[in-house]
Image 1 (tube, rainbow, N blue to C red):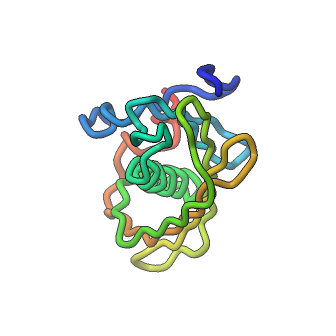
Image 2: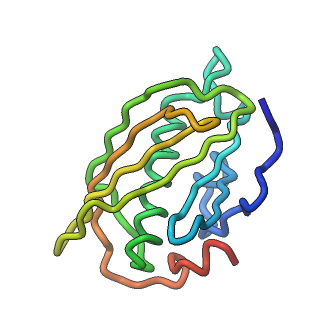
Length: 149
């Protein structure tokens, strides 16, 4: 269990939103061309067994795929979640540092297929995939540089 944010991660600069503020903070870094989402599981994110709540992990999965896809595909726009699937593989406990990575599988005319993995200490804790729909409107708040400003 650790409460330190690993070197290289910075708090993400996301558009102000009460939902994100209540469930964050979220961290990120770039590993070459790959976006890595970081999250420190706090007591407020946990169920009575002090494991990260499945609903919180689903929220993280959604954010991971939205942010990672936006960055990887260089879209710079708001993405809508059409479908989200998550397989819980292992526990995330209070104090655990979680990392997530995304891979865009296919960009179609109107939707994007993407997948991701979330890990704790290098062990898989969740496998996620989604179908996302670009909003079609480039927004400065969702450009790569804005996340790390």
